[in-house]
Image (cartoon, rainbow, N blue to C red):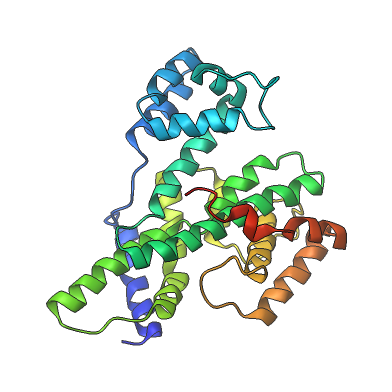
Length: 288
């Protein structure tokens, strides 16, 4: 089966399942859901959040590590989990929960697929980091949210990858048919992942600004220069040009997206160099 035919048929199946609410989507971890519920209670405090978060050692460690980073540390003092959460604040904690839940999607028991998902995750991190920096360097008042928007712009890809893995098992074990190679596998995912990502974001009740970035990360909103969508679109193209991407890149089209983005957002040569300097090293192995 050709890549085009497989992608077309898979898109039809996915669309029907999404419209009929029959697409099985990953849920957020139980601890993350519990913490989110606590944060919605105006009478709850960080003590209750800490008690819930302690049930997940990985989340607790990540919160502590973030709270002792240069951006949040206070005098270098080692913080308890409750103190760390107070430093981070409600908004950052919510972002931390979504980030951790998303990262778990980019993991597979299949070694070959897992390696591809690792590259997809590093690309997502790169887009998130640069989207945040783009808005910060252009003086936008809200830049931290752009990190999450960039991080999640391809969140449908690991979900589709899991579906393709199951389809491969059926074809090879049941029907004795050959499977596509890794390059074609990535091409199929790239063609059909967006509606799945949008469905997942809506199920996780993510903000509309993030859903918009997942829906279309390759078009600029010229009416709102400092939007998340513009920052993600520009950063996505920069990450591809820097080689932090899994799959085929049309260099000419990608360069055009960068050129338009520089004009729309207002990016100078100096800022462009700052954004891309050592990008691969900044994201490689960041969440191993």
